[in-house]
Length: 141
Ligand SMILES: [Fe+2]
Ligand SMILES: [Fe+2]
Image (cartoon, rainbow, N blue to C red; front, side, top):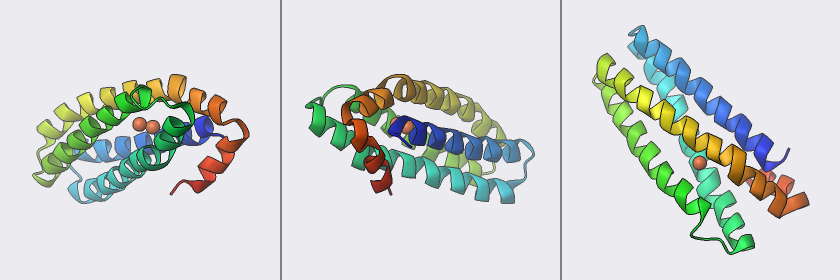
């Protein structure tokens, strides 16, 4: 599996977990929502870690492009992490309205970010790394 395939699949997995948690908040099923949100939270953070600690540095090293697209993606991760933390607070407070209000902007943020990675960055990575691409995927935590 190359970078595009593996990482796009992981985008879908993170989204599915998140959407499940959101549905449980709609139902005010707080106990299950907590578990489901914790799974999504951990998986989003694993995804960011895979990019920030393995894929982005490898790409930056290979291309010499340290201030380019990877920098934009990193700063979007900062915003997504902060939003996830805010969502976590609303969930802990069992504040359905605040959670769902922010949830909408979070999903937009994630979709736009993922689209940029899938349509541009991951395909650039697969091109740049060629046959090495599959090995990089195997090295991911
Ligand atoms: Fe990302
Ligand atoms: Fe990503």
